[in-house]
Length: 155
Image 1 (cartoon, helix red, strand yellow):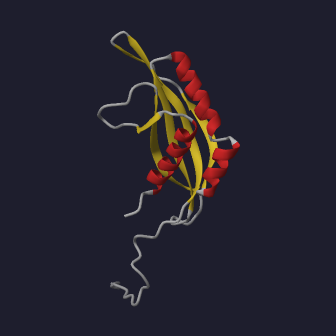
Image 2 (image 1 turned 120 degrees about the vertical axis):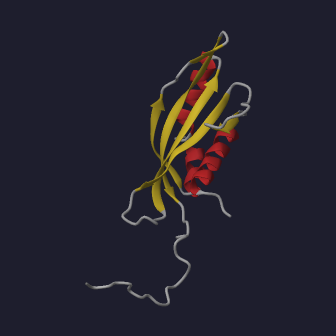
Image 3 (image 1 turned 180 degrees about the vertical axis):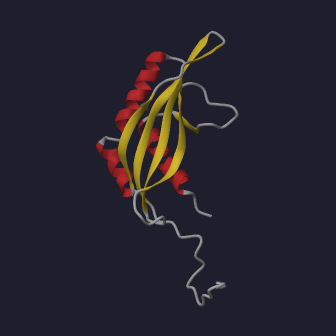
């Protein structure tokens, strides 16, 4: 079975993030052990925003959230700057475009500082709206319809 579109897009974004910075990137909202600080957390809160009238169109938008997570405020702002600029630079933009992905908009997702045992954790980042062109088969269609019978009873 092939990856879902959101899994594919997240994988492509993670590849770009890690290509230019040696840092862990994890899926957000997963219980369990997290890597050492700093790291990025990625989430796809809205995997399909229809832009055409055709619900099975290859063209749609997708929302992705990328957050920097660290215990150092200076490092936090540096990581935010990295993410904010990365996807608008020439090479990453070109490589995303080759895969059918383009950044439409980036919005700040403010930090929600957490205080844990004499330590402050900064985690905030950006919500990216992406333009995606990705073909998926219509899973409701098994092939050509050979016969159709109307099951209608007039009263």
